Length: 294
Image 1 (cartoon, rainbow, N blue to C red):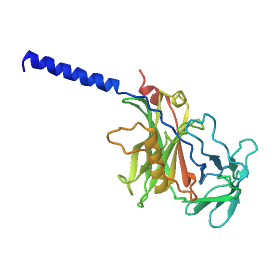
Image 2 (tube, rainbow, N blue to C red; image 1 turned 180 degrees about the vertical axis):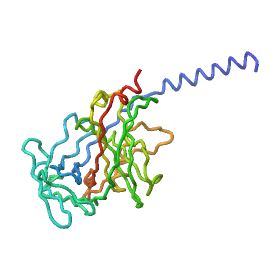
Image 3 (tube, rainbow, N blue to C red; image 1 turned 90 degrees about the horizontal axis):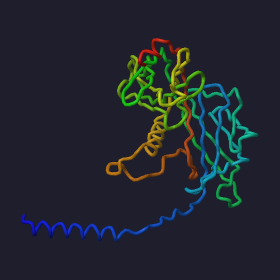
Image 4 (spheres, helix red, strand yellow; image 1 turned 90 degrees about the vertical axis):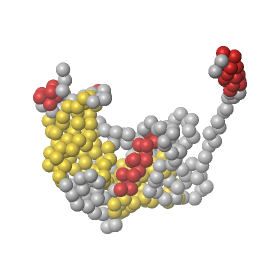
């Protein structure tokens, strides 16, 4: 290519670039309001405790206040043998509580029923239901915390336990000194037993504590408790979908955004689940805490 051709080519490229620059235009995207829907949060476990159900309404994308609470509802949990009525909190609008001695029983199916709400404001009460089976979970033999230092540093919780020969789905959480530190859906680890079905898990890493988070820093004498939940396949898929909307997406390889699944009828949003619970604890000793630190 001679110099004249090179100059012509450069001029053409520059002209194209300038034309593209001059063609930019500000586009205002209007996010219109949509119809209001009921939002439900809550669950039932095999622990004996005051379980809660939270009701609220959807709001606009740029609404900078807390979602409106739904008060005055009639909320009940039916396990097929008895119906337990929940009581609305006196201090937390939209929160409905079971009695403190309530607990679920593995093997039963729990149906949440919500009545006496008028989300669409048409003067007629609506009813919403969702159901979830409570699956059993095996007892944990023991746990151990171990220092790790890869792209992040902290402690991994290793678990020794049998897995049943049936297909299983699990959720894993961590407590430190009686405080749940993996307390968001983002931090919840869910796992199926595809790779260890019916086998013994010899110290499989199942949760993590990061030194980048002050509440997860482990000191000598801390009690670390691992919680395992026996969840349903439907809830497992729900968590995977919800986390996929939170974690960074690769535009070229990810699908378009979509509404996360729900198990409620009548167009409500949210997921009601029942799961069994088992725990195992260990005390952080000096050799473990200082073993990985300089």
